[in-house]
Image (cartoon, rainbow over all chains, first blue to last red; front, side):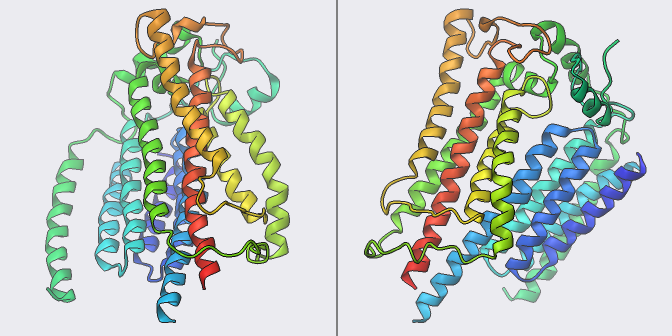
Length: 83
Length: 79
Length: 250
């Protein structure tokens, strides 16, 4: 295992811990985007470029976008319930 | 270093489960579920990795720009 | 069950699961020693058999093409599920046609400028990934989802999202329907011309490294690209429409 791969494994572990242990869903969304990009780098270092390409877009763009839109929807429902 | 690769996969699984148990709404549950999902990706790639191997692109192309990019990915031309 | 009791129960179970995982992972081969035969067979068959250089799309669209068909229909079904679920909740009264003010973007100019600059290159990269699926890393899934990300970039750049109240986003729906149908039709073409469903040899081999090589694999890549892009655009449009309606209502 090369140094790059070892460092990326450790970073992925730390990133996963940060995502799972964060409190606020908004913070979790941003951390999930960063975690997705770290995963894509790990896949690239493990000689799997196709998987890395999919992971960059899904983990960096699609998943945070869906989380943020769902959060906005929930928040506006709560505001409307309060009125 | 075997322990690091498989250990990260097991760690992601367990910490994702901790996140699911600790979360207060369904959105947090889904985000932590994606962390658990990524542990399966890491395990799959760690099992399939071969030391010193190159990406599964068998290069027989001869365009100059493509060659530089393929060499960067450690894919060499076939003899 | 109180929260503390739940945590204790989870702690005990997680310790058991960790022990089980440790015992299971101890029996795996070392990291870097892949002892399987399938990978070697694929790497030897891709070049002479089908004249493709990307062994991954060769596996996904030729050797295991039925699995890819099922995965495509999973994406298709999830798009339909998003439409079916999120459309029924639309019982808010219709607003008058003065929604232009509400749809004005409230984002910063820096975000809008960078997104507008990135939208064009992203489309080109997506189409390049789809077209060269049989040659370089990439393929149908990767190019399709980059194309869907382009839609996100364009919304971030401030494109006016004017979705009619009760109609589906027509472009996205046409794309993902055409992609799914195209995949099945290509499979039937393989059945008609070569005798096996999803056989790719009926379209001729071409020379290795040329854009049109590998039989029907580039065509399957294009169909998959349309399908994935359309499905993700439909799902994100449903989410976005919900949020737009919520903003109107408040």
